[in-house]
Length: 325
Image (cartoon, rainbow, N blue to C red; front, side, top):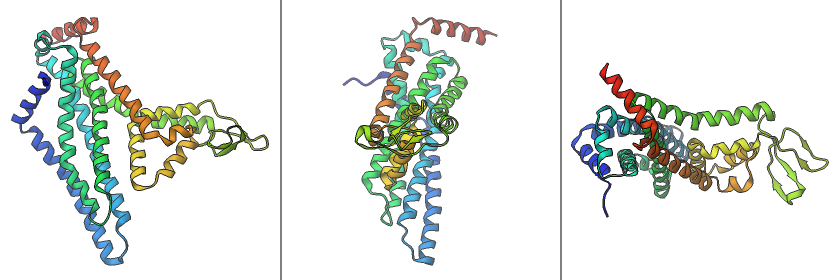
């Protein structure tokens, strides 16, 4: 099987550079310090009170994994955002485009390169997460499950970064745009759904029993007519499905499954107006929706990088004019 030439070249350059080893040391040092400080506190509490440390170990697992995801949120958009824009600023992009490689191969190679660097950080952090099983905490299979989802999140964030890198001509603008788009998809959609439901729905709705479906259903409504057993679903109830595109909600659902607190998340989604079948399969549906989003971002990246695209030609003219001044 022929390896992507861009990806192969990026791997060689990473192997010769000290940037990735230094980054891995810093990344794992932060996680290790947090884990060791928390473990010392758990141990002291166990010695003084003799309580069961299982609950504390679960909290430690969630904290360490969340810090890892946050650090990746800081690294991946920046690395992916400079992948194509950096080539353009170094005036080496025309050489890539004039080769026998297709535009899709160039985009895919740059994306795989960013994913590989971030996944190396994730793999090296698994032993730190495994420390949480010291007192009977998380099972090893759940750690691998978390690592798999973090890898998918890296692909999600990387596709955004590569898209912005193709869309914008300078690395600074591309990285800032990648951070902004990721914030909109996480914090932005989260606040939007909560705000609309609070303003137009009078809070988070309430549970109701409807005879029309002969089952207990959770419908978002500002008013419930219990006499007629009919729920009035508010017009903004469908806005909850924006959360299917929100990786933070998907991450929260995964953690809830792992620590056994899924009922709380399901209740929130029900109160916000999500359908029962979607709530039951939220992880699978949200990952599928985000996978489609990744495909769209990759396709748009290929379109914007295509030399036949008028936007590409105009961007190169502006960049050359800026360098000549």
